[in-house]
Image (tube, rainbow, N blue to C red; front, side, top):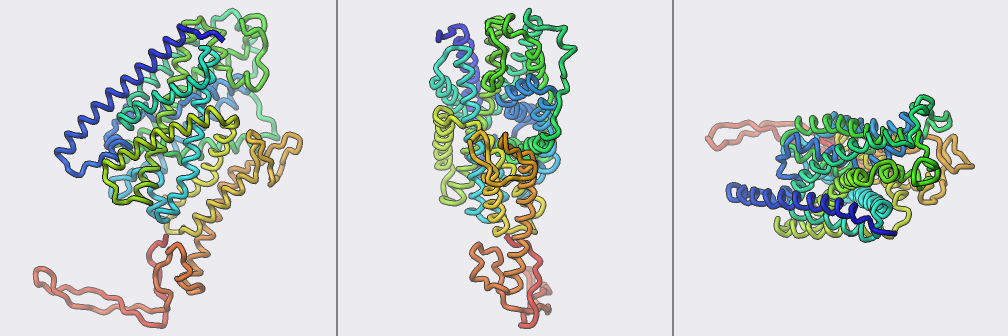
Amino acid sequence: MNVNIGGVISVAFFYCLILAVGIWVGWKEKRKFKQLQRMESGANLSENIMLAGRDMGLFVGVLTMTATWVAGGYINGTCESAFTGGFLKCSTMAIGYSMSLLLGGMFFAKPMRMAHGGRGYVTMLDPFQEKYGSRIGGLLFLPALCGEIFWSAAILSALGSIFTVMLGLDNTLSIIISAAVAVTYTLIGGLYSVAYTDVIQLGCVLFGLVFCIPFVWTHPAVDHEAMSEVDWLGTIPLSSVGSYVDIYLLIILGGIPWQVYFQRVLACRSPRQAQYLSYIAALGCLTLAVPPAVLGSVARVVDWTNGTEYGKEITTPEEIKSILPLILQYLTPKWVSFIGLGAVSAAIMSSADSTVLSTSSMFVHNIYKTVFFPKSSEQHLVHVMWVSIVVSAGLGTVMALTVNTIYGLTYLCADVVYVVLFPQLLLVIYAADYTNTYGCLTAFVTGFTLRVLSGEQLLNLPAVIHFPFYDEEAGEQRFPFRTFLMLASIIIQLSVSLIARRIFCRGCLSSKYDVFDCFPQNNKPATHDTKSKVNLNDDNKVVEEETLILSESQPIPLHHSSR
């Protein structure tokens, strides 16, 4: 395949621009932080890299949040859905992700940012480790890690495929260069560089796709008269309603427990700003779904066989997944397709850098520091973070190059995040007094196991559990099983937590069997009464204190929440 020199030059220019902005912002913020360190000796360098000093403005915050969600999968998926299924299918991503941001802002952004007296958590995993302990909380790092790594691998793989089709570049070289560019400016500036490069990338996405629409619309192969005959709304077969609702809820609720979202929420200056950021970004996601939806809709009335150089109709799954690159390549002039290509690569890059940073942030803060080396210095943590950024990008790159079923793994991990992590996050924030480590661990193992046993077609994983309305011929679950498993995880966690509390607090089992130390109080029965004890305070004034007298007749009432 011949290399398209003009396209390579345009992409190289875009990459150089992104790299230059990322390096400049990183250098600028490092100087600013050094000045802050001279004024405040307690300035935290690692948190400054992870959360941009918790000083992210609303404008930049909205753009970086929107850019992270409007990834290559979002743009390609919206275009593909508009091409194959009309509005009903297309709306799952556009409305789903917007609703996810909206609900995240309404119910999760404020409590996460207000924690610790308004100082806020550092990562999404902090409330788990605070509630269940560092090791069990660290266990929840695994599904979060897999989700982020597989997501970055999937988008890098998509970027490599697009460069191969449109530019004639080697797939391996394209993926390695793209990952290297993202890692370079992330290493230098952390969230600062990621956020400001996202601003440029989002501008490229919006301008590039909108710019391509008139050229696609006026292409001779487009049959404008046929537009009136197309079913733009689309239909959902009755047998697929359950799975349709399931996917909708997966995108809405399963889109909340991701570190890339909370990293931007926790970087805001105040809880209220974190909420506004989510609300406005939701509107931004909905708006940016329009250009790819228009392109996909127009492609439905194109005579691909006789009117384009492609020379055949688009029918196979592989062709349908590549509909956006095909539109750009065959329905626009070459120089316009380069602009469109820049838009798609910008969307993908804006998510690749975010996933690399979020993965390394969770590892350094919640695993390396909290579990293994709590006394590590700030400079040491920064060095570890640099290494983890390179390693996480390397893992994503290797998987993108070697794993053929990367999209199947990505979908399976997204399901696990929905089935396992969302119930955990919901309960640790809104029902912390009613859960403990026993319920958390049981729900985690049960939810994960049941999801794997439910099967995954993209991984050729057979369904051991057949839910109602299971399609034997297609091998598909028609029942909304993901949502069912998510609700089951909530019920299991609350039930097991209640049973464990009653077993230990009522003395059915001795506290020596409390392996997670959830109920550290003595199991000996006791009564309580109070008496006054007179003490002198620092001003030699008489102070009356209430002290607790224990006797062996009644159990101690529980007025605190157990882990």
